[in-house]
Length: 170
Ligand SMILES: Cc1cc2nc3c(=O)[nH]c(=O)nc-3n(C[C@H](O)[C@H](O)[C@H](O)COP(=O)(O)O)c2cc1C
Picture (cartoon, helix red, strand yellow):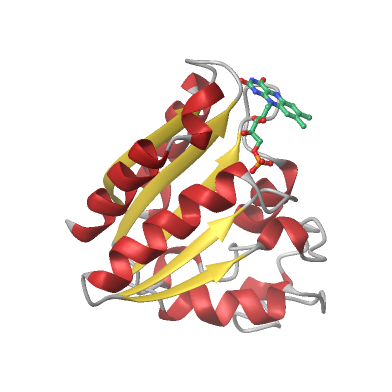
């Protein structure tokens, strides 16, 4: 299976460690994995212009890093959303990418999804979990699991090994 992981953190730290652990496990299980550090990319907000659904025939009028991301999302069998908690929500970086998936709509190949969240405090991902489940219903993906790490857990090799093991079960 082809897996695209969207890391919405602008840093290469806690969420990235979860992403790397997930990618290692998935690769060990024989999957092909693309890690997209969308939090570090230059991706502008959706203009809501409907160009993609009208004249653009599935392409976006905006020319930025999303041009490279969209084909990878189109080809993936599984989309993994990864984000730190920012004020009880996903990062703006990831949010923008989800909005910019508008040209794909329900026509994408992917059927599966997972969510990786890192935070400082426990339980702060409730709204994210709710949004994620609702999003999957909207875009037609099946949830394979949610993994969260907070506080000192983020440094824990044991916790990262659990994420590695989770990715092996896909
Ligand atoms: C702007 C901002 C808002 C944050 N809001 C929360 C929050 O509401 N709840 C929480 O537990 N942690 C919050 N954090 C902490 C991060 O979620 C946490 O440190 C995370 O592990 C960072 O991941 P990263 O290293 O991949 O960027 C916030 C951090 C920042 C920078």
